[in-house]
Length: 95
Image 1 (tube, helix red, strand yellow):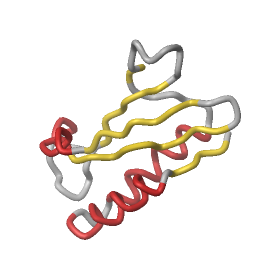
Image 2 (cartoon, helix red, strand yellow; image 1 turned 120 degrees about the horizontal axis):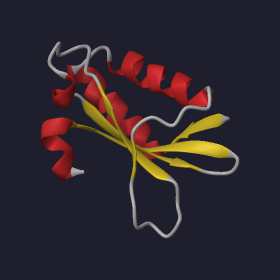
Image 3 (cartoon, one colour; image 1 turned 135 degrees about the horizontal axis):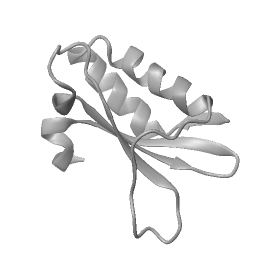
């Protein structure tokens, strides 16, 4: 299945890359899982039947626990999977 990145997702990854050099690698591993048909993470409920998931990504640049990593929200559609938002855990409320 095709994986599409929204412009907001791309710009946020670009900003995060300034501070965390491995963020691109971390996101690439998620994209590979999604392309392989996996749907990691938890489904967000009460969205009118839309298949929207949130998943934790380990921040390999920070070498901290998975809890202090990134959060990604993505939508699973009929033709493509769309990566919507990525944020760093302590700052997720700002997004």
